[in-house]
Length: 301
Image 1 (cartoon, rainbow, N blue to C red):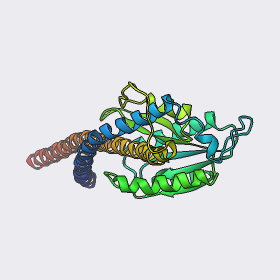
Image 2 (spheres, rainbow, N blue to C red):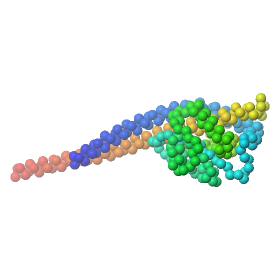
Image 3 (tube, helix red, strand yellow):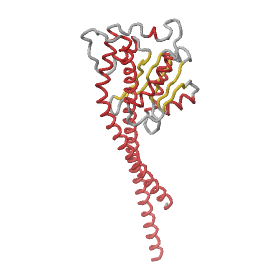
Image 4 (tube, helix red, strand yellow):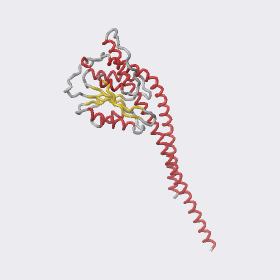
């Protein structure tokens, strides 16, 4: 019985230490979530403005013919080579965040890729490792995204991705990630990034960022090409940066929720173990009293 009591006592001590760790991790994740949400609020206005400009350019037909001159085939009968920029985390202990992204992305890929001729562009080590083990074509990976990503980080990602597109390595690109709704809920999104066609414009217009309707046509100066050379890279950067920022927000929220759940489970386990320990200790004391009483009765006879 003594050994059993010691085992239970050790489990209680160990579980309390684990709870301290999960509590600390929850606080860290919560702090990161609060920090990144401040950046998201300030970014939303910029994203709204750049999307408005691109939508207005599309409505003014300035984007017409853009993709025909990009070097990609316009033959509709030809099977398109798709690529999927999938955003996951580099670490675990984020609840179901990574598994949700990967599961939903796989379902999206099955629906949109008629053949196995597709590529994975992985942002985050979890997704990269998963698709490599599965034998998929991971043509690009980026690990170590900051907890609060900077715009400069995204620029090098966008530069590489657009370079691959311009070289004809794929014909269309979708960005797949978890959209942050609130601290308990996130929803999967797949937005078309390239080419910037009707589908991509419609995808941008359907998102939560408010886009003001066009009130006048554009007079382009100095030329349409020079305007597009400035606006479209900013649009691509804003789309990817927004997705990574959104995904990171969901990651921190999921981590905070997972650590809180782990702490709550530890509390429940500690209560159960303490009850078990007290009952075992009470039984041991009762047994000792019974043995003493029996011994006294035997001596008095």
